[in-house]
Length: 155
Image (cartoon, rainbow, N blue to C red; front, top):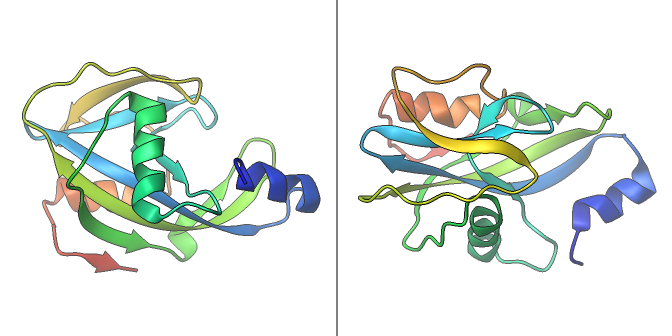
């Protein structure tokens, strides 16, 4: 199934669904990589839904490449986020209850970034100068990164 969420939505419409997704906190010189999202008009970490037939690491690497052009290896688990703070409501009325597996990667060279149609652009932001608004579902792990809390969270 190449696009699991679209297939599910074609059957259930806008009713709430559960989705497993993954994201990566990419850090460069005390800055976090954020995308300015074209669907919700806010800022969040790159990532997305894991397809039905994918392993978690395969899916997160695919999403990162599709959304940023980055090929990342040696990802570290940052946390697993779920519950009330992980309910996404989209402009078209779709409601998704996410379980998000968040990874961390510190890079030492500033990469050339390539964005897709899911974002207006990508950039690195210092922890003291984050853009607004931050995507509500991503706020939990971005806040933990800002506080430099690297304890693995399972929420």
